[in-house]
Length: 224
Image (cartoon, rainbow, N blue to C red; front, top):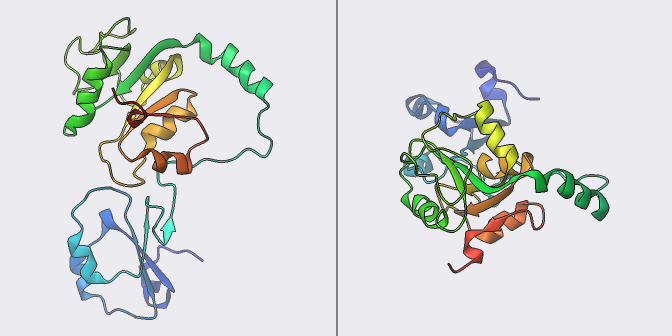
């Protein structure tokens, strides 16, 4: 049984606490029942959480596969009961994928991680990339024959975003962190719209562990 009724906290076998919603002052005044399991839910990467250790949580639930409870916080792979045959897959490629523009697309708003911006600037000299967001300067996406104009309003969840995701062959699913197992909605959204994610961040084996076989391109697969 699961409940959000705080009046029943003393009788619960497990107390689940979300890191972002924790009231640490309240936590310090709680009289702990040491027969209970304290379960910390933390789904963000690279945050300063040193003060968390003093509360002696028993278990964690995070994006890390090594956590006591590891959930697909951003996405999971579900194996079809009846996989497509090679004929069905090739038919989809011929009818759908080959119609897409021979370009990659990227939506980026967090400008702090400079490594992925550097990779973008390098890639656009070799392959067309339609890029949008405050990190992209005016005309910054006009590489080769990319079918996009940088600076165009193309916000999250907009029809413009959907259009580029569903008509481009690739998406730059560059994570902001290199933390182990930190694979966010960028990757899963790309797969869900039928594009191929070009990934950067965690090591290749992190993606291979959870993704469909041969479903992505990792930048570390290439030396230049």
